[in-house]
Amino acid sequence: MIYLGLAVWGAVHPMLWFLRYMRETGTGLSGLVDAWYVNASTTGLTWDLTIAAIALTVWILAEVYARRNWVALLAIPATFCIGVSCGLPLYLFLRTKPL
Image: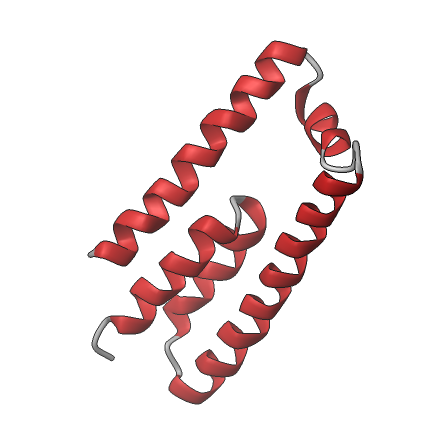
């Protein structure tokens, strides 16, 4: 249940900051994406999370192929639509459930 709690936290907490930013700047999603590349620090963080998301996806696909735990595939869209902070703990929650 800790993994599930972390997945919910990883979905809600970052989203609050994203929504706050979009509300303050009035730029919407395109402004948020532009902010990811505003300087070397944010660009580095963006690439760090992108690479982590790809590595997590490869891991999920390999494990699903081996374990046939098809529901664990739900962690992939969670990772790319919400973030690694949601996708990773969600996958760990789905992986630790008895098969």
